[in-house]
Length: 251
Image (cartoon, rainbow, N blue to C red; front, top):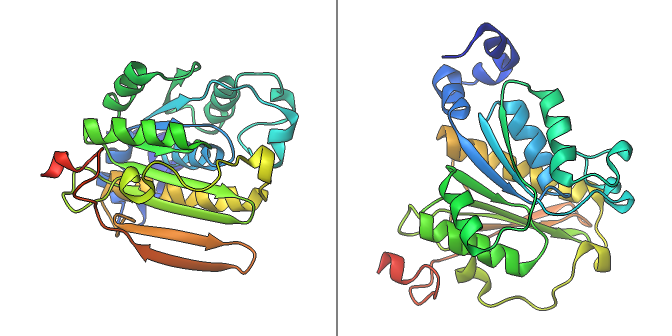
């Protein structure tokens, strides 16, 4: 049940007919893994903690650097030099002491990633490199766990939901295969802070929709964001029957 403090804390959310008491209880009972606590993971972690997701598993092996602070809003100047996980835990605990925070401070290998994914209900990929995204996708397909994937660089962002519980859903590999053009990072190409905030906020929204069970998640759809022109575009994405990651799973 929700205690009096929780009823008050989440009252504006509970007022929504799509959430209500039952939806808030579902959030309280949910476990979510956030891979990466940078520009995308910051708003994801902040909003899911504030929304009352009962257990957040936080994965990042990096430390806070001064150059992170332009966009990674879960961290602050006093956090420079700290583990990103410890910095995030400090902030999230202050925002919502009602939730549980589980730390993964070291890089996840194949086995530890599989175990981390198996321990939760949903995964958010907030990483910044293709190899991590591929590994997270494969673990989610194997464990049949929904994956909310976001990316942002320069002035462009994208977002999609891959849900292996649905036979029609593609996976990340269906869309990107063995990689896109150049593997650029924000440190090489740059990125504007509000863009990663926007993509991360949308990732958090998709996660809430999946956990509570309302609305239409971005399954089979890729949302493209052009921050320079303030335009959104949507592409339909189909599952690849011959995909080496998910093809045989639904055969």
